[in-house]
Amino acid sequence: MKSRCACAEPGDFLAVEGFLGYIAWIFLRCKDASSSSQPSSRKTDVSHFQSFLRNPFGFVWRAIYKMTIGRWKYASRNGYDAERFWGDRFRKYGLNLVGPGHDGFSSEENERSYRDAAKVFMEVCRDEGIDLSKSTVLEIGCGTGFYAELFRSAGVTTYQGIDITDVLFSDLRQRFPGFRFLKADIGSGWVPIEGEFSLVTMIDVAQHIVSRERLDAALDAVDRFLTPQGRFIFTTELERTLAVNAFYETQWILNDFLERLRGWSFGPPRPFRDKYLVCATKKGDAHDALTMRLSAHTPKERE
Image (cartoon, rainbow, N blue to C red; front, side, top):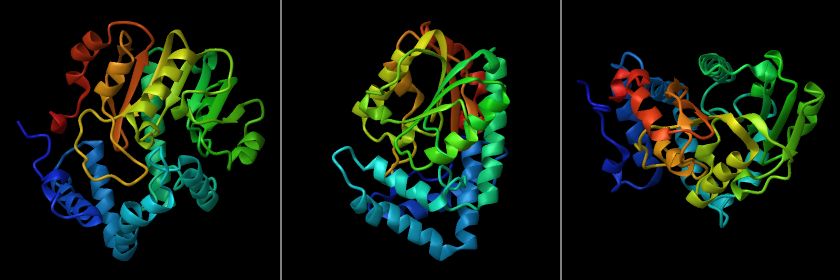
């Protein structure tokens, strides 16, 4: 059986500080990815390599910025000033998917990645028996409104989007009359909304909550807002592999969610962009459900 990753891991570069270790690790992962037949995360590594080939200077500059300058600029007691960082980023990119996506990829590459992600999301909803037209939806991290559009197209009428910055809210409210948007920090655990929702989503958000205390607060909020037997769809990794992170990212794995949401039932992880998409149901035997279903839905190269 092929090992999960035949290339080096970032821990092998601990003697090389910051971005140099990160770049070296990306190159070795790309080498492994080029011979791999499937997994989404490895294909993302190839895209990183292609990004470097197109613009080596830009790639290195982004690495320097994320490892040094940005870390200093947005430093705060919570790890980084997320409201300021995401506000600046959305002001820069507007409704372009580069904003919530990958700033080293082109607009077209990000759009293609999001379209593919939307297909996986809809497949999960279908397989889990979620009728979006009858769902009340809370989206944590509504960003540019990509998923708000998906929900509207699927017939959702009750929708609440929250984000840590309201920079794009004027545009979103014009595009989605009847949908509600609220500026709130889910990592604080306090979100000033009332009622419960049958579906809560947190897609490509958890990795930007960079402390355990704030992740736990976010998941406790999800528990409060979700109806009994409600569904929580989120992105995660299955195991920790990344030791070199940008200042606004960390890596949480599925076990981190299992530990906080004890008793919930977790569906099979699905490859989703550079991570996995998981649908959890409030209350149930989470560990038994995961054990029974994990191997059948995990890509070969992740064994």
